[in-house]
Length: 388
Image (cartoon, rainbow, N blue to C red):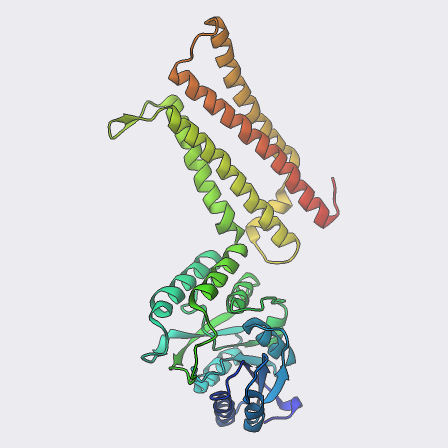
């Protein structure tokens, strides 16, 4: 073990009742670092073990810290905070990761990377090391979504073996306490423009004699939920824009273009459905704009698009757009009203009904835009202190 002044790398191992494997993991990490000329310390972040994990970890050469707050993320955050090294590597205490892969991570850090991800899919996954659902569904799908939502560009977003510059990760102000900590680290690193690299790593069957702490569906949902909450663009804006565009297009087509599909004419019920989708879509899209604005102004995340929208936002322009749409809807419905009066209150033909639905849709959208603009202006003013 190195003295405080000499420590280059801290290896953090979260631990909860891992007496069968934690000592072996600590010894392997020490031997690997010593054999690769890496001055290192091993920190075991104990999360309330009721067995001999802490004792065995100390005997193997680790510094053990007690973490009262339960959870994988809570243990890792405490371990990172206690780290003395310039760099930090994290791995599990169940002997599933090869500690011999650590030097490759450190090499990338020395070369200028801020975060180095291990990739089990680019490396080796031994038979029985990863459950079928995790290997062919959970990890690939969640990695794909994380890359789609945030542009991380990695092949294994949830690898538990990774290393990073302590100063860079400290700037991210990570907050998660559960398994989603792994996603939060990568998402925030991507948002902040950290230099991310990836190296192949190995995974072998763990040495436990009990079930793993990871719960497939529960923790998978926590990861997905976290990604959605951290991406208002994909949670609100994208589905809202698609629903709104499709709904408005259907309303216009029914009103102006006689269209028959599979022998059936698109009639009034389609116009009503289109109107509902258009209004609902705009509401979702506005929620996305509001959420993204809060993220940027409160410093939760970064978005160049949202930043440009905030900087260039002018209340009066959006009020004018809302007014134009509202007036267009009123004019359309007023024309229909005049026609109805001239026919002495006679029944309206279907085409006229479709135009009335379009008019009502335009009025509703115009009002939503106008009041949404006021709310966005309020958000901006409350955070920046500029009310005019």
